[in-house]
Length: 301
Image 1 (cartoon, rainbow, N blue to C red):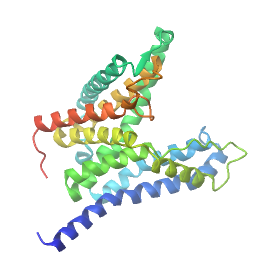
Image 2 (cartoon, rainbow, N blue to C red; image 1 turned 60 degrees about the vertical axis):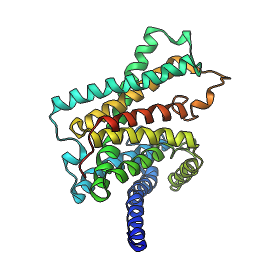
Image 3 (cartoon, rainbow, N blue to C red; image 1 turned 90 degrees about the vertical axis):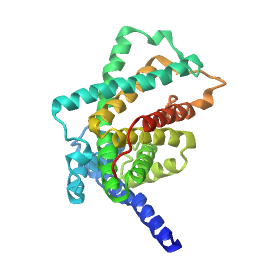
Image 4 (cartoon, rainbow, N blue to C red; image 1 turned 180 degrees about the vertical axis):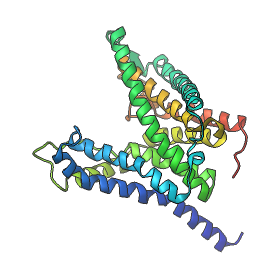
C-alpha cells in the first residue's frame, strides 16, 4: 500500500473518530445555553447543575431518532428488532450476568480488604431501600447510555468504518462523558445567563485531568459491551442494557454496606472515581473480553 493511500486511510479514520465530537459538543452547548431560562421558569424541579447535566443527556438521547433516520439507522442497527417478551428475557439474562461479573469483582475487593463490610449498614431495611433505588437508577442509566453508545453511536460508526473503529470510538466517548463533571453548584442568587458555560468549562477541565485508571476502567467496560453487541448481535441491545444495569446495581449495593479500607496495601487497584473500578476491573473485564472474542464468531463487516 502506498504512503498516499495510508495517509488517506489514516485521515478517514481520524475523521470518523472525531465526528461524534460535533454531536456531543452541540448538545452540551445547547444544554448550557438553555439551562438558565429553564431554571428560572421552574418547569423541572432540578437545581441549576441538574438542568445542565441532565439537559445535555436528554438532548443526546433525543437526537438519536432524527439523526439516526438521516443516517439510515433503523431498529436493527440499534439492536431493537425484537419483541417485548424477547427483549425482557434478554434484559433479565443480561442483568444476571452483570450482577455475576461485578459481584465476583467486588467479592475479591472485600477478600483483599480493599473494601470492608460495615456491620451497622447491613440492616434488611437499609439494603432493601438501597436495592430498589440501585435497580431503578441502573435501569434508567442503562437504557440511556446503551441506546446512545452501543445502539446509535456503534451502529452509525460501524456503517462508515467497520466494527473495530466503531467499538473503540464509542467506548472512548462513553468513558469520557462520565468525567465531564464539576463540583460547581450555583444557587438561585448566583445563576446567570452564562453560568451554564462556566459549568461546562469546569467540566472540561475535570475531563482533561482524569486519571488514567479512571478513564481506562470505563473504556474497557465500553469495549466489553461493544464486543457483546458485535459478536452476539442476536442478543440485541436489551442484553447489554441488562448487563449495564447489573453493574450499576452491584456498585450501588456494595457501596451501601462497605467502605474503603484506609490504609490498604492494595488501594491502588481501585480508582478514585467510585472506589470500585480501577486497575483490578481493567484486568478482569479485559480477560472477559478475551474469552468472549475466542468463543464467538467473527462479525460480518
